[in-house]
Length: 341
Image 1 (cartoon, rainbow, N blue to C red):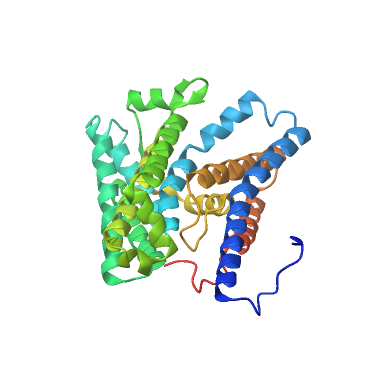
Image 2: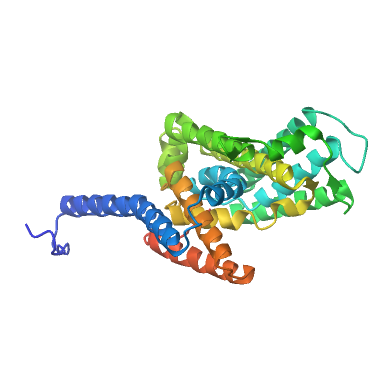
């Protein structure tokens, strides 16, 4: 058998066509899994050769510190993309939670000092808001990108009303200490992100919930027929995304010490870029946490390198757009009629 000759399937039996389709899907899955890893290695080597300071300890720590927020958001968005949906509300939730926390702990605007509850309550609100978004999506049957854009806009407006366009500066000493703290040379906020990422790994790979997420993304009708409560799982996915956005809002606040809605601005699409580059499909059902971390590392390394060589911010955004188009074109399953639900 000549493995280099493409088989003519026009006269093949149904069984032979099925086998060929399975082989093709397996080959595509391997490409989707290993190509981003190879790209990451090549990029790291190439950037290090071009600039000897790229792989220095100082720059690596800098990359790790910058990847905290994207990694948290990407962990939550991985679940959303795997069911074939998208969550545009994460930026609004992130800005709201960060703004809310800044007003409930010691700050420059008021005399509040809720302590740990000043962090817990806004995060719970963010999770509940994610549940509301999910419920509206499944009950009203509105496309996820429309309903999440609407709910994200609403909660962003609420955030601005909370601080009346006058952002609060955080004065709580514990948050200032956490911002400057590190473990093994790596910022604490990055360890928080890694811990949340590991929780996402366990949920996706070792629970019935994770298997249901993959099943819904692969074939929602078949998942429903097999007894999976599709609506319930979808709502839980949006709740987890809300939790990720809330935690990202907290981490962003720890970094900046200023509670404002802009904490979430321009945070989502870089994560989507990283996920798609890493191999997670926008059609759902394909991807995972390994692809997520690889994609985040690729994106952060590229962003860091462009900064080192002095590329203007506007050009970075243009490059990001090109990457999205190329990555989607390479990973899109052509037989699917839609890329999101």
